[in-house]
Amino acid sequence: MKTISLLGATGSIGTQTLDIIREHPQEFRLAAMSIGKNIDLARKIIIEFQPELVSVQNHIDYNTLKAEFPHTHFTYGEEGLIETAIHKKADIVVNAVLGSVGLNPTLQAIECGKTIAIANKETLVTAGHLVMEAAEKNNVAILPVDSEHSAIFQSLQGEKEKNIERLILTASGGSFRDRTRSELEQVTLEEALNHPNWSMGAKITIDSATMMNKGLEVIEAHWLFNIPYDKIDVLLHKESIIHSMVEFHDSSIKAQLGTPDMRVPIQYALTYPNRIPLPSNRRLDLAKIGTLNFQEMDFGRFRCLEFAYEAGRSGGTMPTVLNAANEVAVSAFLEGKIRFLQIEDLVEKALSNHQAIAFPSLTFIQEVDKETRQYVRSLLY
Image (tube, rainbow, N blue to C red; front, side, top):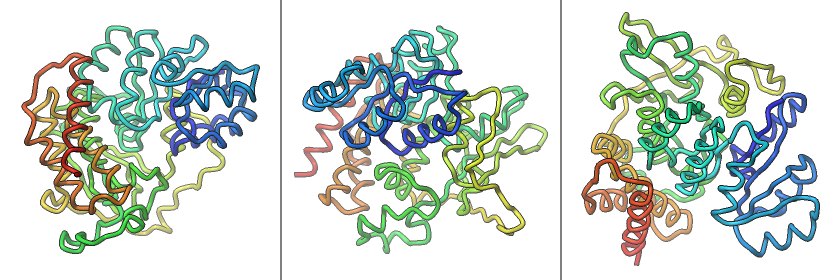
């Protein structure tokens, strides 16, 4: 049995991870978890899974739950998140939190020798050089949970890095994939949150609509697979059946296919290098689907994807700025403060306002992150 520390238990990836634990009680046990503000769902999870350690976001919720569950150890805040990540009884840390808050707990867990199942894009985007260096130093596996990176990871099993020609990340195109830029001027929040293929949290769904999500995945792929940016392509694939591909020097291409269900890559990260059944998943019927469609990406249409490539190639602190600016901009859109296309404008202004610093330390990354957020917020008023 593998014991799991789950960061972000009440989010989309977190609840689907719990589905897998629930479906395979002989394989997995929830040892520790962190949650944000969804206390009602946290109560249900505690009752069902009985984790030994629970971290919450604020002190008020900490006091409330501590009184209700006297046999569970509670903690809170940033220190609580780290305590959850390094919980001594956990074998695997599933990092499913949103935002750069997931970076420090991941680094701490790596130092403790924990296997990392990474669903938190921002950790690798903002500090990929630090994460991968620490993982190599501590002989820790970083296992991808994103469907695209899991597909590449699975396609590379038994292959040699030197034989890779390029990585091909597929993209659904998000909520507005069939609309022109002029048609995006007045789109609503409700429309943006209506993803055609995947059920995800609000922030990731908006990132999918702007294609920032794919841009962050390009940067992730660079770090996870040690591949230069000019060998990472993105292909529009509306059906989300082929989750990504790897092309080799001999022109062979390997792909991983499946229905759009995040539980598949989550479970593979938890069971790697083995596989176990997932009975509740809908099987892929290619005959029923009939046709798969592909298109080249239009960087003029999806400007956030272009920003991500530019930030990744610039390196250093530039991806930190990209991520921080995007988080503030998306939050502003979700709160009704800006229009959809203004997300791009704010990110572009933040990138133009910053001079990249190579090989930044964790402290410097955190400072740049903070300054970028302050700068973008200043543009909102």
